[in-house]
Image 1 (cartoon, rainbow, N blue to C red):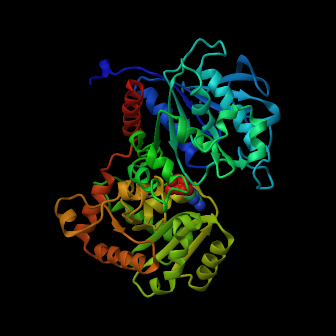
Image 2: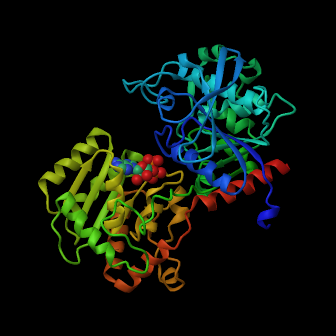
Image 3: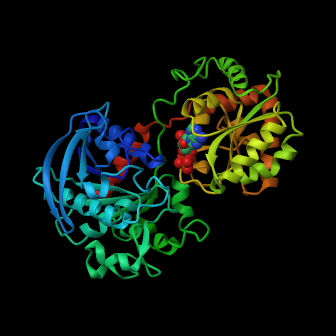
Length: 487
Ligand code: ADP
């Protein structure tokens, strides 16, 4: 289809966070990037978010565009632009629920807000009113794109309106389901018909995510492999039966990576480079080693890990093999924060072996860029990974990753074998079982490959040529919208 033939849809994109207004994780990145990429494909997109205190405090013109009377009371709809763009953002303003310090889901004490069910139910009711053009804004979407459990009630509520827009529900991480005690149900102003295992009930609790999984016209996840995996007991978090039942409407689309992750223009790097001047990476490596206090030794590869220090990311597997890794010709660098036991273990080892391992505990985005730009091999042994960003950054930065064949990792990294080296598709090392012995073998394999300079550079170059742009993802979403609307 040529550009002029491309249909233009009205899409209401509902999310509980969007960068740069508010972000706690990957959902914020997607919601801040995908709507913009869709606009570049000439789609008419509006983003809707709760009007959190942090959002209201940000610079930018805000005006009130509507008032809504919803079951729990009156709310205002505010309008502003997403910073740095022309994308209209509608903010659901209900001060008792959203005008608070802390993050969207937790109070300053680190515990979930006790009224999260009521807060996000109200948000969903407001999104539905906007979707049905009940706010008098004279804009009716063709499709509502919902994301994660905080928007799960939207497809359920809309299902009761014959003249409704189509609905798509995206699962960013099935492990978070929005489960609340049975007593909560009565406070949510939902039809009693929803209190059933065929609707929102999940083993005696209210499940927000089920609203999306049961009622949305289509469901997708953030990688094709994860879409398959969640239909099995190992990854399905108890929802595998429902997801398998809906398999005909379930698919996967990989996330893109932000334009800021580009080694040719990255301002965080001492030297910029592309696949044509990979040798510049050596200068970045020297600077990085110096920054983290590791001695520079010619020819010694630097392994790196960046991420949350939690079991999902396989940090325990890495810790288990560290004593044996020490015998191999390599240095290793960690950047992460998370569970204290892992933070402590890494810091202990870094103190004990300062010329071999360095650990930076905390969240440091510029350092993450310098690590991707300076390390030789990236380690990502996640147990499950809906999409994963770090492996894509690594490929893009010529830092071949060692990954577990799971979720988005399986979809983005091609294992190095004689055949994939020959046909030029190899981009990293992929292993099959999340156990320490298999991980150890995979790292040894990567270190051997690293010694074969020509093969290694072929891996680097091929990884750097992959297209992980948001434009590519947006095209796939557009095709999915088209399919959903044609049904
Ligand atoms: P997840 O969303 O499960 O944490 P992803 O790989 O999808 O994992 O995305 C993680 C993002 O957070 C990446 O952008 C990564 O670089 C970044 N990140 C994680 N931990 C840190 C850290 N300690 N410092 C800087 N960036 C981090």
